[in-house]
Amino acid sequence: MRDAASDGLEHPRFALSLITLYTSIVISTAHLRFCTERGRLLDLLTTAVSDYAKVADELAGQMSILSPLAYRRKRLEVEGARIDAQNARDALFTHRKEHGC
Image 1 (cartoon, helix red, strand yellow):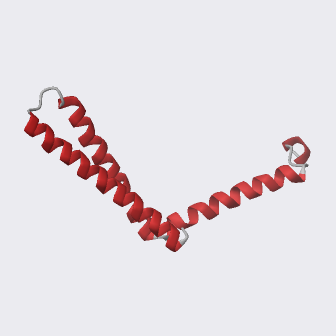
Image 2: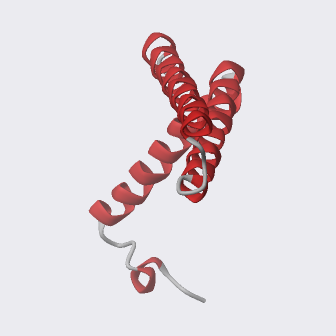
Image 3: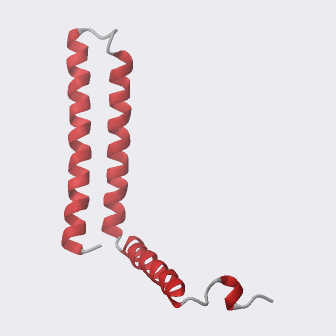
């Protein structure tokens, strides 16, 4: 059978740091579980960033074969996806600031 001395928990500072770590994890994730708006905004941000990466990757792969007109259209598509991702990030930031989660 193990005792507290063999676990290294005999030091109050060590035990306190474990409790603080556990408490901070529980508190920081509590809002994720209970704030549906934050979850919705996180999903929106994840989707927007994924879409932006996909469109930007497509442009990079096709850059040498696109006509000037097609390039401009694709570039505008990339710019629109970037703006959508920024707006999603800003909405999440604003929600976190106002709601405190």
